[in-house]
Image (cartoon, rainbow, N blue to C red; front, side, top):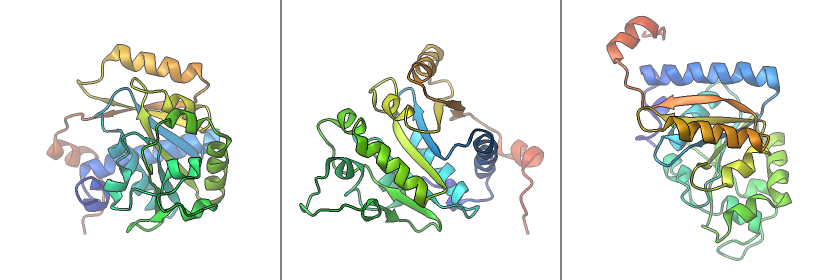
Length: 231
């Protein structure tokens, strides 16, 4: 957790301030459009999607709102390693009804894990299933989101990259809003445009694009934009 969650580890850093600005923008959009479930996806792997999802979740939890991060990448999920919780049981186990110890866990809260961060819980990806996409189209996925909305103020889903598999396109139809993460000087514009088009074609409500890995001058940022209390 120490290495990935800069908002938790360095709350006064310029990057943490950027996440708070992102949080404010999302909260404004959420009030306007009534968004409670947010899917965060990307075009390809290694663009920082899970890092954005996790740090955004921390900033929201720091305002006192109850937040849960759902690892929607049942192929290569890493949310459990960021928050230092158990990798299973998780989403795949809930959707399939199959657990390692063959126990029957019927309540969604049986799959939720608390983190060291106040107000922030995690639903790990679980065991790697042979058919992640087929699990996501089950009625249980919609039921899960509805149940989570009754428990939490904000549900953040860390999805799969849209260029690689269709999982996030399936989830985009179920959530209130979608955010796409792009990496500076890595993400190709044509790939990003294609992903945005595909999300809109399936009915996804796009909030916007977060540009990650953008070089910034720490001294310049602190001088111009950082207003945090340094006492």
